[in-house]
Image (tube, rainbow, N blue to C red):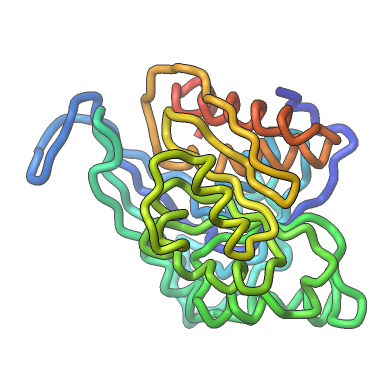
Length: 301
């Protein structure tokens, strides 16, 4: 994994940049468990997680998001700068508090999580102003680089993006924020503009059917209109589907020590590999390896 920052290429990450409050225990948990563990507050959100991972892979990420002007927002802006994520074009409003996400993880995986991304939703299309009215692009001269888009945006705004001329030339990569928001990606099935990164459950929600394996799900998403679909399935095989067909690979076996952010790391590693010229099969393998390193705890949060 190349962590060099030479020959950096800018990539836009659109969506949630917030504070993650994550509690982790080393034993299995259930509803009502009260156990010892560790609690961290770190910069997070789908767009931020992807941006931080892209930085590790030698790219120069910029975030289009909403961050409050409250103390938590100022602290978050400073943290983004330290982590190499450019927030120059973030939408700042004194009326919107900085968003946050809270999760509890046990040895048996994610127990529960709450995402408070109401400010991002309230900001709506205002976070896209730099792509529509400059300096990053306009409707007449669209941005031509790679964009990572997360599903924390409202369904109405995602529908706009799926047809907006300002995104017509971008290499648009999209991921849902959670299974509960997977159906927000339906506009990208109708308009065939984007590469979708989803897990098996999210693929089933988008296709309104159940799948036993990732290859079946990836093929179904492409058949329903996706330009391309990458479907993960935890420790089981992952697939990349496109008009060229479906390819599948298995992730390395590792001891899982954390869950939150694994999908974002997978997506970032895959994008970075392809930006650097890797073939489909090599990019898929590199993404799985990076995600495995992340969940094993060997890569920093």
